[in-house]
Length: 163
Ligand SMILES: *[C@@H]1O[C@H](CO)[C@@H](O)[C@H](O)[C@H]1NC(C)=O
Image (tube, rainbow, N blue to C red):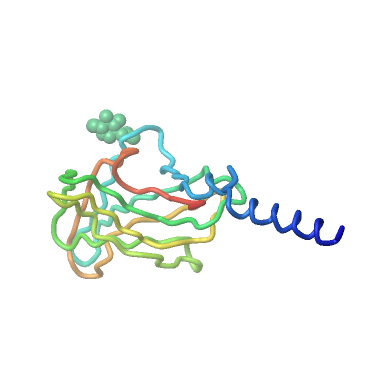
């Protein structure tokens, strides 16, 4: 009889525990967002090259404030409807990580907004690190191209994590 009472008491508390979300569960569902390191906003990104990949103008982007122990880092681009972006020629941008022999292409994007809807591009997902750096460069080996936009906290490139 005593065993039965203890068993139902344990069962009862286990059910309660699984039914009621704890504050930690609720926090885990909201993503955190990191913005690129900058002396100020907007960041005026301007990426271009002439034909034959001459006169390349690349932009660096660094996230230097990802808390230790963060998980699920996702590099994203978000633009509100109608966000102004200037482009010409072949404006596909490649994202690179690392330098020299460890240089690796990690994603591509055509920076573009829609006149009628918000747009979102996922460039790639990464293991989080306190500092994450990339280089943005026109991808074509032959074509001239350029793209420029003002990156703010409401438009442009972010790293989301802990989703
Ligand atoms: C970007 O350009 C705007 C407009 O010219 C300027 O106010 C802003 O300071 C520039 N951003 C940076 C980080 O220099």
